[in-house]
Length: 312
Ligand code: ASP
Image (cartoon, rainbow, N blue to C red):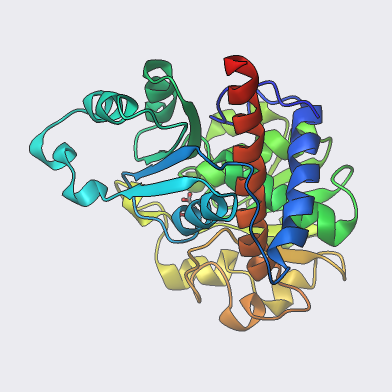
């Protein structure tokens, strides 16, 4: 097994063999998680601290569950109640925690690059749980695992990523990962939500939804990230749904066995039709959540092996 990194900060530095290593190990954790007895002790004796400076449902709960299932001592910092509110800087908070000797620090932050900066200051392994519009590596890995299990492979697939690409770290990490694994990635959305430089990442860009998803194996929908918008990027939600919302009719243009994905949280009736999102024959949204726990277990397991090797 090879995973060279001390941290997991993004998909960008990963080699395809590291991605495969991570996904293979995650597959074994899917099996463990489906058993009645879900405990392993690979992180026993280690301390994991979760620091979420931005709201989260799936990511925070799955990192917590992942650590607990692997036997770590897990602490969730309540960032709303922390000294950050009193003006303490991110780095001061991180250094304070560092002095308590954590082994794994899981960090989500609204600013791109904040998690990388923090990783340079602390002694433990840092996992990026989403930084601004930059990267969300465990999301891309759980999406990759979901695709690999549904399609039986993770290469030579046509994958459409649709919607608010501009504000999405999920899109960025997925474009990087799917490109490294030799898939054809298309970005579909209004030109206001697809930044020009994205075209340099080796993707095809479409502003017509039906054309964009035609013949695709995977249709990945994204949320309109209003909290990151500082102006009118779309005329109205109604108009947006009409042109870019995924419903059964538009999905009819993809391959007959195409799967539908969404990282959550979903806005039903804005980017996706609620009935389609719940259709277990097409939608793998619940599988994505299941894969999230397994991928986070695998990531922390591999980083802990490297920590132990370093200490030995
Ligand atoms: N949950 C994902 C993220 O944190 C996607 C989203 O918020 O729309 O980036």
